[in-house]
Image (cartoon, rainbow, N blue to C red):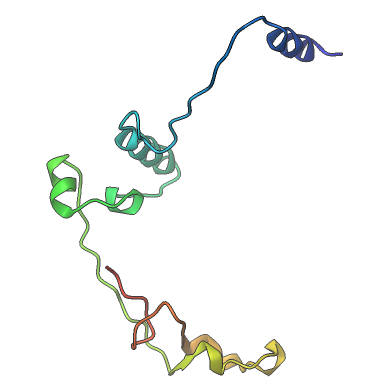
Length: 120
């Protein structure tokens, strides 16, 4: 047995009367969302990725600005497509799907009449 296993065995053999362990993953007991956001922002920033508060968790513009964070107004750019079809119109076999599909928008149940997901 290696040294790490011996320590693990010793830890499990402690005579401790544990009645329960409490995990607070969602911030119910402690408001940790801001800390999580700032940690992720710093972590991904080291790789040249920029995230804003609204990318991480839902806040209103006023809430973001009150915290002194940057707000980015989002605009949905509608791509230029040659055709919009319902997903139900796609052939059953991938072999029957034409190469032009790369220039199409495919509408699914979760999208609006335009074929593009609507933002709330």
